Amino acid sequence: MPTAAKLLAALGFALVAFFASELYKPLLPEGTQVGMMSPLNTLIGAFCGWFVMGRLAGRGNVAAVGSGIRTVVVILFYVLVLWSGVEMLDRSVSLHYEGPVEALTAMMDLIAEYILLMISTPDVPIVLLVGGVLAALLAEWGSERWS
Image 1: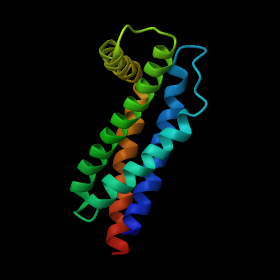
Image 2 (image 1 turned 30 degrees about the vertical axis):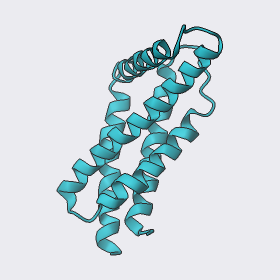
Image 3 (image 1 turned 135 degrees about the vertical axis):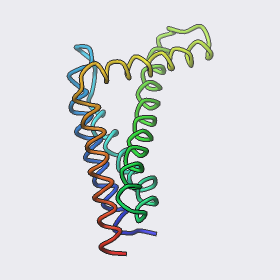
Image 4 (image 1 turned 45 degrees about the vertical axis):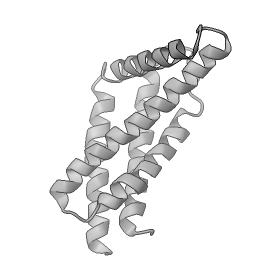
């Protein structure tokens, strides 16, 4: 059922995902195609905001902070799986791997590589944590105001 908290959570976490994506792009190697990165990450942020944070809103501000961090972790999980899967499929089409197990192992290596790249500068983690907490408090405010 649509609620104000779900809508505000979706909007807030979509913005967090968008800004984190924009800060992450310059960290990627030169020549990396990033055309759909921000729109898809924003969509994932909106869905996670709606389905994860939206249903957790209404439990108080302290719980909202924890729920906001939880939602950011869920967003990160789906974004990392998406983009490492895309890269793995790109490489597998060019016969880079000998089998599916090697491809899945390489996908896990790509996830680790993307995480290390993300934490190489404090900008992206700060945006994710602070933005996640602010988006969660926005959803909590909406839940208290219009419930």
